Length: 331
Image (cartoon, rainbow, N blue to C red):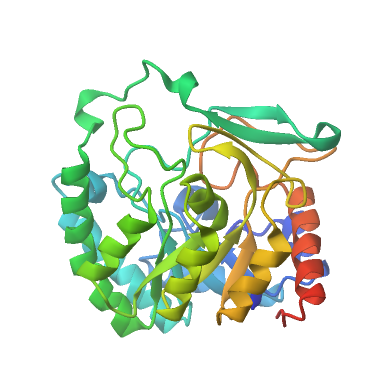
């Protein structure tokens, strides 16, 4: 397996240096302009410069993650979406040229991954985030941003019809991330990737190599899915391209993040399960607590809540320890 970490696209001396010191060789980044200070990655020169920065720091830039530019028109089916899809296709071609083989993406419209609080105390007063559906009662987005599940499915398939062939030609695996939290609707916005069955529906429509899955362990867990069963099936079909490892306590209606060793999920057992079923690709620690001396800012998506470095260092230690104990090679 390839140990990776989601790192800022713009050089961050502390985070980048510490990631290398703990043995992380593979970088994943979100190359959106507001984070990189450069043009979006449909611009070849911009993406190449980001890749070169990571290379100079000792990393292999293995993948991009998240919305790399505003995809509202694509997801909501608004005028201008075809022009944005063309930019998305250009980004995929650029990734292929630069040998960046992974794109972790989602189709959450209007609201990305979401939490209702970011100040929940964990072990030793570390701080984690929480989602409680009760706290969203009565909250709805403006009417023009609301969308039905039927329309969202239609827009999603329209998008995939256009981009999956380009991804295949470029040698890029588009690894679909589930909706987080996996409930629908959320503030009046439908969410469609809330079950394993939804991912099978996508595969039935597009059974191609470029159509793959980001197996976000905690999100599938709070869906109520059997992690071993669904991952075994998908690994046998060679559909999982990326692992996100974190843990949560609770259910999809009310949960909080935890330390990687302080939740209900048997991390080492599942890591061995993924290896035994043939997974050799990239994995990364997902959200981790903010620890002593760190703060979690107001939730804004992107790389904010759950992405301070100290909790990630602890998480990497947990993953490497589990891998060593289970004799899993880790690059």
